[in-house]
Image (cartoon, rainbow, N blue to C red):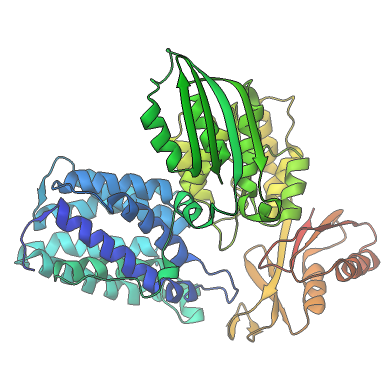
Length: 546
């Protein structure tokens, strides 16, 4: 295919190709993770983000590239996961702004739109780091502006852009020392290259299919299509339609429910509507109903208690939607992984828990659903993971439902300590001050296993070693898990340490955690140790020291 102008239909196929190409290579991108731990998720996050946008274009027939780019941008914004996914969404947000009002894009239009995308992405990042996806996008866009006039076709333009991206990608280790130390290029930059290589193949008339259909990224609604026969909540309510709210149309309402589940019954009698649906996301069904009126009755029954881990966040969503008849002054949303940790956060003041963390970064849309699920004037989000903060911030910026503030907690210990400082009788300003202050007063430790041989910060690491991470630095490596966690505790504690919380995870038992507590108390007599079965994946232990 040889084109000088790209319209909406061509761009749509480029995006679908790009999404599939990245998805096919997502595991390799994950493996570029700097830390040798089993939590590399850049490829997964970027794949899920671009697929969220591609899903919006799947059945779209729109000749205007400006409109297609805008629809893509919205999909990416809502589906953005992890820092790399949020940056990707911002790159295409700016790209869409650069093409606004255009039915077709010339090569020059494309060059300026890429530049606009880079500007938008850099503005979205508080402290941009060079040697990352941002660098790859910026340097290739700068080259695009200088060289677009030499390109005779859009195909030639994208060939040039990809060549510049690869040059930039190869240079990322020179800009980010940790990449050079480990011997890899930036994973986000590599993901961006795969997307653009998919674009180019589309321009050449090639269609990229998924190598493995199990890699297909689905929305929660699509996931329900596979599982609704066995799992879900039976959700029933009677609604009194309020003419002052959104206009109610039975067929439209039924279609919207159809995206959430099955076994749907919608019966209207004047201003009374009876609704029945089986769904994994009952909170969404309740929110949908509440847009049109007030509940007279409602009932939610869990049809599969054994699958609470899968649908636990939706259960919390339903409970909050059920309970939130009166607006609260405050609500706290927290992100955690592990049923035990989730229970601790809920018992200590969290109103809504999004199940996620390493390898399971929630999207912007997940945060927006949680924000809708709590009825409060002021909502505080505890992301508890450095790779989740940007998605939380993005949700806070786009929501109009409440005043939403993100406490930038990067670890479970930080979030847990900040949560303990919350005073529901205080004002927002004082709470934010004390919760933010708490972040600097806790040390965070984690123990997991190494997925490859490497050397970092002077620590020699062999595959399957148990490694101890203090904040963001690997400080311990040992063949034995107990030996590793004890060595990590020695690095974390001193004579001033007073409170130690041990969350033991999957694959670790209470007896071993108890022996760890005894070890700590024998060496640090002033330390009070609490042991909690966190049931978290990936990390055998999470240690909090105050």
